Image 1 (cartoon, rainbow, N blue to C red):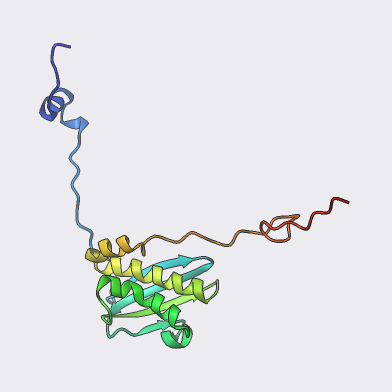
Image 2 (cartoon, one colour; image 1 turned 45 degrees about the vertical axis):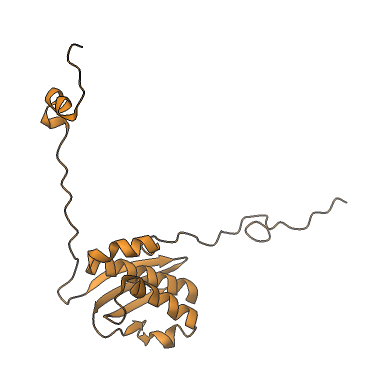
Length: 162
């Protein structure tokens, strides 16, 4: 090869413009429905939550009940408040959620995941803070199934030599 390629311009001249298409990064657009809400689903263990958020006074309704009535334990209420405090929008959004499956702890995690995804859809600039906190990642840990011939998922029956 008599032509040496030392720079990117030399490479583009040899390969042509078709080899390296220009990639333009477009900023994310908010996803808001006709009623001014954002919708997302959240999952944790066996629980699935459908979450709608809209600007409001900070009222949280889960399966038709207020948050402090449905999630009576303070730890579960704290889990639900985490996405708002990380994003810095505490008390600015009303949340309506329906949850099915799992127990209360899994349901609280599912609502937290759904609220985080809905916040990111409503205001894409909050994505960085929510992603850094790990709230947009679905926690995929689920209970292991019981196997045939075992007492539980991994526990065996007591071994007897004689």
